[in-house]
Amino acid sequence: MSAHVQGQIARPRLFLAILPIALTIGMLSIQLFYFDDFTPHTPLAIGIVVTCVIAWCRGYRWKSMEKGLFHVIQVATSAILIMLIIGMIIGSWIASGTVPMMIYYGFQILTPQTFLAAAMLLCSIISVSLGTSWTTTATVGLALMGVGDGFGIPMYWTAGAVVSGAFFGDKMSPLSDTTNLAPAVTGTHLFAHIRNMLPTTVPALFIAFLVYVFVGFTMIDATQVDPIKIQAMSDALQQHFTFNWVVLMPAVVVFALAILKMPAIPSLMVSVLCSSAIAMYVQGVSIHEALGYLQSGFSIETGNSNADALLNRGGIQSMAWILTLVLIALALGGVLEQTRCLETIVLSIMSRVRTIFGLQVASTLTAAGTNLVAGDPYLSIALPGRMYSQAYRGMGYSTLCLSRSVEEGGTLLSPLIPWNAGGALVIQSLGLGIAQGHTENLLYIVCAIACWMSPLLGIIYAYFGKFCPKATEEEKLQWHTNNELIMTLPQSQTSHLANSISHA
Image (cartoon, rainbow, N blue to C red; front, side):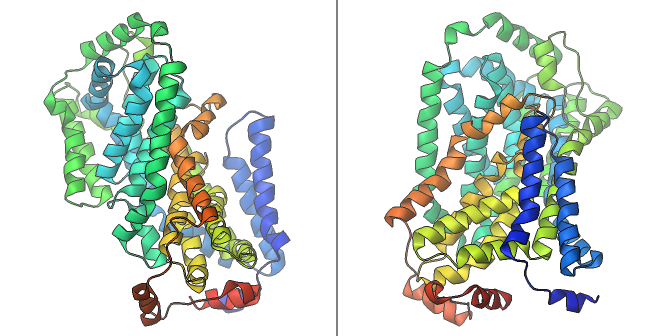
């Protein structure tokens, strides 16, 4: 069958579109909750097979399905490269003493009661400055995990605070790729998009801050903190690393390059080279050892088991689990998109939408659902951003409402889905050990309060008609100038929606 003929294959019925997704989620649930084994790779791979078999029965052939499978992976290539570099950053930043120094002085400055709130604020400030939640999580977040462990705070609470701050910063930074992607696919302006996110993001961060303060002063007993454990860890760090201002240069380099608006990949590689050089000239690491840390991660025996558990990590090889997971999840998302399953689900939702509240709920949940089944935060923004923009225009609402909802369902919820690129990176870089049986640390999903509170506030605002701006005359003029599609949903049928989208 030719590619041209396959392109004319009708969309699947809703049941067939949902079936492979439902079966995949069912297998994931059995793997996690019945077998108590968090290795989602195989269920997701079987999901690809199920999707391809159903698509084959509908008339698709492997060449067409393969095209969709590899297309999404190709789009996410930069994210995959960043993950590899983050593995090198973790190993080199520990070897250079950057992360150990942050942990050491964290013990001196922070207190158990204020730690969670301070961790969230620190990560948010750094993430806004860098424009990347992933780098913030893997560097400063890793150091904060060490401090939290010393204070005896459950890992999932510390991880929740780190994720709340890091992904808040990613969402609000003009340097962030997802923050630029959302207005790009919805036809809005970057800084207008950022301003329109303030009513949901700032209250969500404030609520999270209050919760972390409450937890710090009510659930964390400072008298139970073992000062001997903290002192032993501090001594181990001080004995095996040299601390001075030069050791912080890898972090300074990343900040400086972010301010200069350098691309993420070369900026991170410069930081890797800088930290490796510092590891050799300040910490006395050999060239062979420095290269080994980039490949296999940092390794040391300090004589303190707690310090060793924090420091022995990183390297390209440490990212193998997460990269294989992300590649499989992306492949599943690509096949679902290529065989029009995602399109059918979105169109079915759109045909039932009648109000701005329904539209906000639909676009937010579609972004979240795409995150869930496709494993890619970029696709979760781009897909609903493309498909819902005509509906917002038809209702006379600014597509700023859409860009905010897909950012909240895409960027903020990605770290809360363990097999998503964001969630897998959080689990791996923070050392939550989910795959090793520490499934209780999945509670970080609940503890990342700012991430799920922001989209919830957006839906509540839409219900009461608040902070959902109507399109200005200037915006409507721009629609007509750019020949943007405008549809009126109450009278539209699914077929009309499909025709409109095909011309988008």
